Image (cartoon, rainbow, N blue to C red):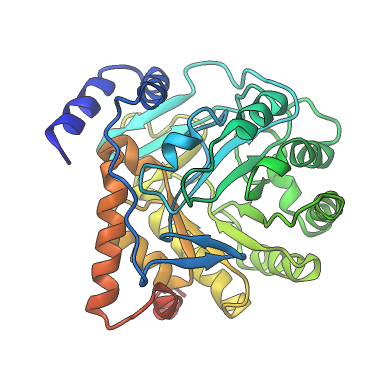
Length: 354
């Protein structure tokens, strides 16, 4: 981490988390945020659901909620970028305070509640992106809190924004919208995804559809999700979203309600990833998310079965320079273990997590 970036993080952490988040977006818009640049190589270039990634390290949803800085993020070293979550209508989210920095645990608790400016604004911004950098940009689809047809909400956002993105993620796993996780049940999930795929079939291009699941599902629930994924021919699963569990968390904010992300989530989310890998036998792309803060963490997700990985929370504590550190470190780890390409390492240590 450069001295400039270290000072920037120190300054941001003088503010409460939500204000710091907004200031970081403004810095990206103004072009004053340090940008590590994109690193790639033949060992790192990979394919995810038909999309060509310059490297397998992506940005998770939740940072650029309103697709304000996707062009800047496409220059920040990520192999792919996910904006959102976006709902059909704008909504303010849950009352503040709703975002908490757990510095002692290198973690975040949030109960944001899908605060966003709505699909019309997001679609306009996504339509204006330059596409000057070879980095796929996706959108996390959400549902309005007061909707009486949440499945329909996912479809509406997809129909409005789908032409302007390279992939979408159906987010039924946020713990901060009441009863949203109920959509992970097999019958409701199959009905939801069927409607999403019908909407895709009516579009002019094929857009990969991923499903983001919770880390708090049991083995039977995971098996049911895999069965649905097979039945509807899902393009991939994002494992995982935040957790409602607090095992091992020490910070004074640990009792705050909401989803926990960051290092305490790493083991739980990686075990879910490995179980999904075993259930799918490597035939369904998996994106590993949860607690990645180093190249070793990213490598562990890949060897547990991930095709690609995403991070977010660690950037709060380490800055954008961490992305380049992870990408280059991942390349070194592949070479150390004799892998000529990242796909060769996928799932090689899955059994360690089962």
